[in-house]
Amino acid sequence: MSLSVIILAAGQGTRMRSGLPKVLHPLGGSPLLQHVIRTAKQLDPSSTIHVVYGHGGEQVREALEQEEVNWVLQAQQLGTGHAVDQAMPSVPDDDVLLVLYGDVPLVRAGTLARLVARAEQGSLAVLTATLDNPFGYGRMLRNVDGRLTGIVEQKDAGEDQLAIREINTGFLAAPAGRLRAWLKQLDKNNAQGEYYLTDVIAMAAADGAPVDSASADDEYEILGVNDRVQLAALERIYQRCQAEQLMRNGATLADPARLDVRGEVVTGNDCYLDINTVFEGRVTLGAGVQIGPNCCIKNATIGDDVVILANCVIEDSTIGKQSRIGPFARIRPQTELAAQVHVGNFVEIKKTRIATGSKVNHLSYIGDTHMGSGVNVGAGTITCNYDGAYKHLTEIGDNVFIGSDTQLVAPVRVGDGATIGAGSTITHDVPSDELTLSRSKQETRSGWKRPVKKTD
Ligand code: UD1
Ligand code: CA
Image (cartoon, rainbow, N blue to C red; front, side):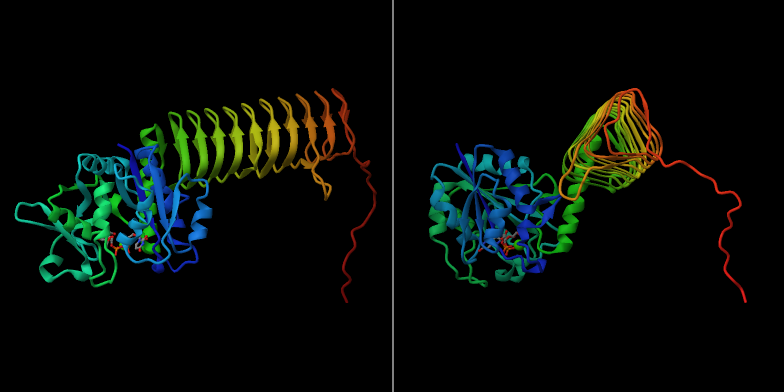
């Protein structure tokens, strides 16, 4: 049986007080809606996913343009039943239909699979939860046998019904053909003057169709985002889950509460993460990687046994095994470091390849450079890679020794085994295996006196 998924995402999200549509607010670095789409795909990669959008519609479509979904416009928000109905023309009768919410991002595929399994057996299946404080939610109505007979919304409920603690999470699954027939019978005769999707429960029960419920594995799965306080609460839950995943995969975290994953991190065994690391995009850590406090690592591949000391920023780069970075190093995009490279404090590296065992340990800028192996770059060395209009390449051979405070004015080439004297400004290619230096001669003026301020 094929699966069709409808994700409701047309609501305004007024309480966010934002120019950004609610479903685009990020959780763990991705829009809320994207989490729901991913979960739906995880459930069944071949499912057709319809997203019902309305408020800020074009912005939502643009932000998620790479997602393979069918966008369905609900021009006026006339209720959840009306929203689902907008997508029904593209849902085949013999599919199972699953309804999700774009602002409830943490529901898990396993939970949804139970709902879908019940719908495959022919039931209308609703995900419910029992809450200490059910305020605001639709309440599940059951007859004396405990069978579901309907849902009553908070605003329509009588006093007895308000005491019911079993609530409607909003997620449901049903055979599509049957749901279509019930949707046709919806009306707006209720406190909010909306077409309530929830009314299909009573219709199904009246038709004698099987109505079933399931519950989520974890309480947080059903939590929705209405304001930024709830968003922050979900973010912490999400980050806790990411941290637990990393620990289960063999990483030690100094404090699971002080780590943020805004993307995907893969770790080898025995990684150690000190506090306040932020990972973004896709990051891969080899085995035995150690990361000091306060690092930001984005779209990077870090080899086995690399040590990254405190306060480093690494982006779009590859760090070879057993390298040592920081403290206070910045590795900018398109940098590729081979094994055992050392990049020390207050060093910036950009769009540069450095071969095995080379060291840039103190206060340097190395950009647009190809550097060989076994090179030692002295403190304060700068590649002058930019002439104001173009960027130029600096090429440094193997086993080069560059004295401190050297400027390499690119384009320039330094041959294998060359030595450059400290304080040199290198504007021409440097031959292999020789000492090259450019320096004005040192002089001493004996007897010279410092000027002294006159006093009256
Ligand atoms: C709904 C349920 C309620 C349930 C609660 C769980 C109904 C009538 N009520 O109530 O039983 O306990 O969710 O959170 O279904 N949406 C649209 N188009 C619309 C209206 C809503 O796309 O015309 C979307 C919203 O963006 C949101 C979702 O549907 O993602 C739920 O809408 P919302 O207005 O929050 O429903 P509730 O009144 O909270
Ligand atoms: Ca809601």
